[in-house]
Length: 397
Image (cartoon, rainbow, N blue to C red; front, top):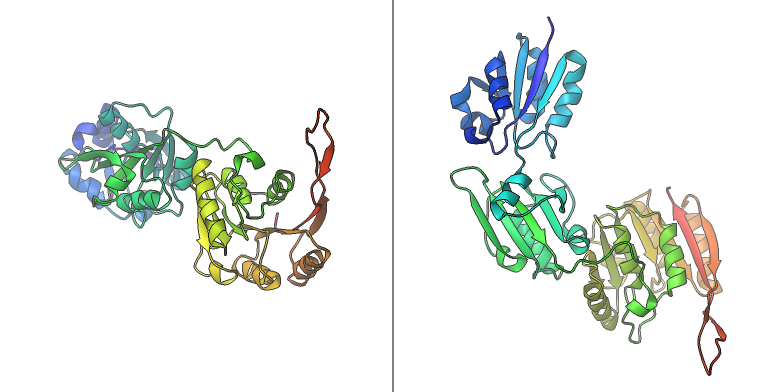
């Protein structure tokens, strides 16, 4: 018997949001399957058998009928269960996928705005955060749910200094209890909501993640700062990915933190600095440069790292004499971590070499940067050398 599986996008899950194709496919199916919520909303359109999302494919394959219709919420091409279902069913018959209205389309229509210029992400039942996306984009759409509740996410924006951005929240879209609210992140952080909510966040002054951080961009004060030539080389050695969690140990002014933050627009940089002046500088610099995915952490390592998420990479510009212990803890927490250590003295160079080798970091490499800059004076441009700096890197590739 030839088998036919139709995965049907149901939009909001309300009958009025179904396409004609969806209704026709439901009428032709010998068996309709869905989760409890969809079955309750669409019960008037057919006899729908319910089962958990994770069991839908198994039940479809066990059915003794030629045509099975599987109902999924939203649009089948937008963070949908349809992709996983198609993969499980394709070997057993013909799979047809029918699109539906997405929550992004519905919210933007309610607001009278476009979504072609939006960045979108799903935090529904997933790890992640909004900070990088909102920092570097004018418009961000986010699916929320589970631990990543819409109200909690708005509070995370407030905590990072983004309480001023405009947020629209769509709750129970398409249902009788639908509610759409617009305000600042700070205002919506005060308003409770249920689990079926989506967010559209607008930042009229996003940072540009394609630009490098130059020394002249930074407020420095009296705090040490890794110069731009060494900073650019060091960050490249870390092989950062867009969603990485990164530590900047001994962050100083935060110059390396800002550089790394632009390389991890879906991640977070924890700028660990023991000095009060440094922490204040980091906070001012992150706001001035729009790098809100830099989170200042005051304290001394390794204690300051204790309650932070597991890092993918770490830059160590200063460790207060705890270099070996700090590297040991980092590698214990993530055996595949990528690290770069800077050294301006032969003693630190030796300590870093011994630590990386003893702790069995892979792909250990050492380079030395010595930059010379021209400085205009009295009608000429003499050259002035910066202090040489050693870069030691190691870890998985």
